[in-house]
Length: 363
Ligand code: V47
Image (cartoon, rainbow, N blue to C red; front, side):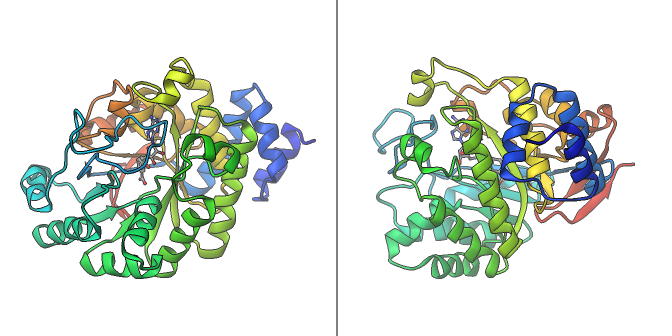
């Protein structure tokens, strides 16, 4: 069993924490000591910098063949109330105002539509790249890539190459949920399993794509599942090094079966902060930890900056996944808003692009 003093020495020496250290940290109640450790790990990597970007989310369809029981966004068919599908040609007009306002990235994820075929998704990328060649397209989770493999019979590499030829620039980190099968089989049994999810990212990294990674926490999982998840990501990162950022995702319980079963139990602020801080300490080879403001609230994301996080995500503009599941945050944050939240927490706002090149430092 470890101690705060032993962990302090390990963190100061830049030594890797073990699975058992991670479990020990989750069992502790002193979030100030935890925060001090995470903050020093974060300071060594990033000084006082906190990143944000100018982005817009696009969810081309919410019709989905899968039935993940934590999801409030998906509709099972085109006929269900609230179902929508934008054709690729409809998208440019919707997102042009954001481009005119200076957005640099589209974050594109959506349902696994049972009828549309891979060409639909390829066209989404092709049309957006044709209309807006200077915008970075961060699109499709590993789960979507694996679904496209099933649709086409192509392997992950061939699917990714087709999408890269159409204009794909990088991949978001969704679909990871909780890797451990004891939990995964209960919350999303149809989804790509851990090995498959990691294989897609492994392939993307080897093709030169940067990707992100996530973990959905605060439902039926236990601390050991969270630590197992972090260790699996860390081991993948040792092999390919292409993960840019880890984003812990707090379960939102409204309008989904899992939430109903858990009597609409939300994560607590302390759990959110602990999970962010422990991820900073465990994921020594993933450079950035994101406090996703639209999910946490800007206020808690601001506190998270002193507990290991160094990125707040971006302007977003339109968010559906968390708002359908009960989020009460705004849809959009202005650049001035992001800068002032970061400054008021005592940090230096830095605008980045999707792959973490620094564009402007607001000293
Ligand atoms: O994969 C779905 C999660 C993810 C709920 O890469 C839920 O920069 C909580 O991955 N409660 C999509 N979470 C979002 C995502 C993401 C977000 C921001 C930035 C990036 C990035 C990635 O949202 C899904 C799933 O894990 N999710 N439903 C829910 N009820």
